[in-house]
Length: 238
Image 1 (tube, helix red, strand yellow):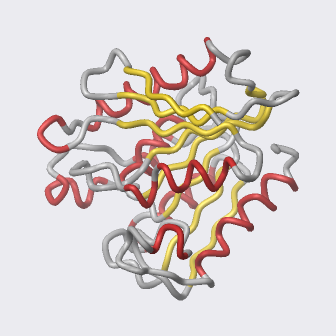
Image 2 (cartoon, rainbow, N blue to C red):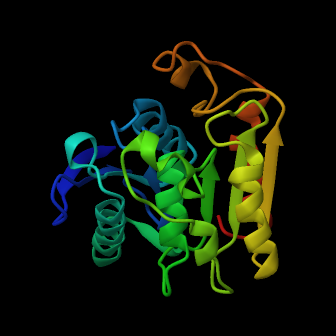
Image 3 (cartoon, rainbow, N blue to C red):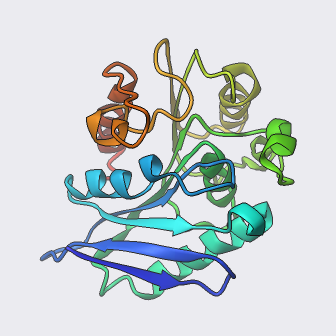
């Protein structure tokens, strides 16, 4: 595997590329970590990228502006530039553009949702893990965002979502339920899992992410990963 970092034109932004040599194009996944715009969480970034890579994916992590440079609109621009780079280098990156998607965690889930609702978008599917949907914690994060549920349209790609009933930062009724209602209204294929265990920021919920996430391991909510792969297979997206 070749791992490299490419600077994006958006200041304080870059794209981590995890490229596997292959005889035929593979599915691609653009990953947007969480961190409340104060950091890029390791639990949601490289460890997620490498896990998907073991399932024969080409993976990418967008490092959008955080800390003193944090800005929601700038983060969205960084995602656009990341996808543009991937599309312009699709042959050398060995990607099947018809199987290119996006996944976002927490604040990264809000940015991922925003990009997936763009017309047009290169994302053929989206996955949102315990995402921020409405701008209810903007003050806490120190940014100005938007209600991305209002961006959902008939061209929004199929979307997989999961969260925890124990999540106090982005509770179901204020975030996932609002987004699910918008997907239903616009007849967008979706799957939603609200687990009774876990919590916010659980990542893969296994030992691999747990060692950088305060030993947070939960085999039940961790089932989102195989469920996501199964869902994509059922939709012929991988």
